[in-house]
Length: 254
Length: 254
Image (cartoon, rainbow over all chains, first blue to last red; front, side, top):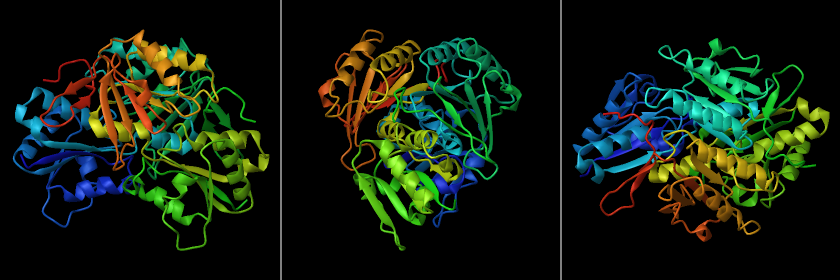
């Protein structure tokens, strides 16, 4: 088959964070598939290019549509916010290949990485991911809440910094409260908590608080939540929000 | 103070993965500070720019040097491979600020995120980070081996995909073997293991193996090691290495 499929990471929002490799993959595609909000950010190509904008749910349908077009010989780009391999479209495409037409395994499929949301969120405040960390999606659309609880508990017991993706949506407003309750039962009340909404966008909003003080109702689908490790610290400064960082280790470097 | 300091992520290697925001931060700097191998990748600026290339150790000395130059009014860019907030220079800079001259807290310090190594490594093979995952540095230069063991155990017990940074160096050839032994005691022998060397570079090398079969002597400082979760799967294809992916959840999507 001559068609191809590339799953492209757009980065955290502003075009300033799109890599040149990803920009080229988008420019070369004959077909762009993805959530309309992402598709609308992509500059118009100088060759004919079909845009297939969709809603932001049912990733697997988008993946199958993309594979069918590629199997017809099109050069398809599936777009994801952030990095496509992190709670985004890349896994959905390979799930669709595994369960789909055996001919799809002969397609040229590749992934263009991007700056994922937790990196952009961390950069807004300093270096909160400076130590060991983990990333957990709170969406229980495809996995059980028991699995999520097991991972939250393990992450707390390992004293990882924890980045929470998909912390809440209109269909799932309660998970973030349950997750914070679980973490409160295992971590100190003064553990640093960051709510970073629209990282790397002009309207970014950062709330720096604690596990005891965090207001779960401020978390929505555009928020990345970072829960500190025991070592995560604030660095106060005049007239600005504090910097937040996690030292690289527990030994003194001075 | 009028000086500034930006900690810039170069991404995984090739200039194709440098974001436009990071490229602009580098172009605007009066001083570039970093490991010589990274500094040498940066295009020459059209204005006077001093390059301070160093070895790749003692990050804290580089951070202090950068802060001193910024305090003198220079526009300093500290460069990191990958993302500066992930086992790289950003935490070192904030550690240096916390322990250093109080005037440094008045500096304009910011972070330009980049594509970190695990994202580039994952993109080489498919979507192995498609589920919940964690990132652990095996370097015990600044943290105790007991802390590393605690986190490896927690990551295994939580059934996370595990990305191992700094898995080995000439000064620390043995940690990766110890880490794999610990993981073997807690995870299935057929757990997928990926050794990705020089991700996103022309000489990338991928080894797809298992926890039972992995040869630790093939791991060096340019290798990113990914240990699968129980759900991580291979997808065989003709004439190529298999794709590797972790489904987004344990529920069937078809």
